[in-house]
Image (spheres, rainbow, N blue to C red):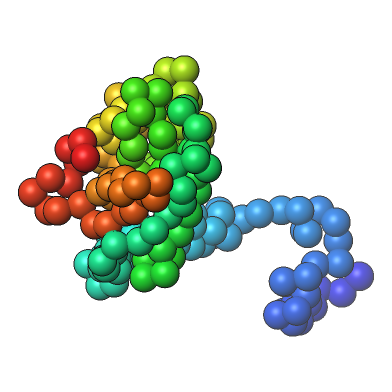
Length: 174
Ligand code: FES
């Protein structure tokens, strides 16, 4: 056996080693690189979420929209709809008290779809057990940080219309 030093490995052999032991070995440097990449990605994602609403404010509901006929939604029933200007999902609720409410159907925590629970008079977000008041949209329980955005509902004859909630009344009952 001679004492000659081996030539350095080519880059490809470092990235794709032939020996199994080398292939499954993760060096401290590689692990630190991985952690930096993941942390950087999380920071960038959080930063993007923080500025997104400021850079691209949500479109406002314009004017009044016919949603459905009153006869199409029984007491305790709901009606899902979207509006052309916002493209957001909304839920119209015919409360057992014969009142009407309309909310964005996106949870204010992490945007899961929310569902009306008629017997409880509450709106549930099943993702993290978040609950909202079905009359006001207020948070009752769980991680949602804000009430559900609400639309103004008006019943004229046998037709149900929605429009933007006046700013001063947003978050209150319609
Ligand atoms: S997304 Fe609704 S509680 Fe988390």
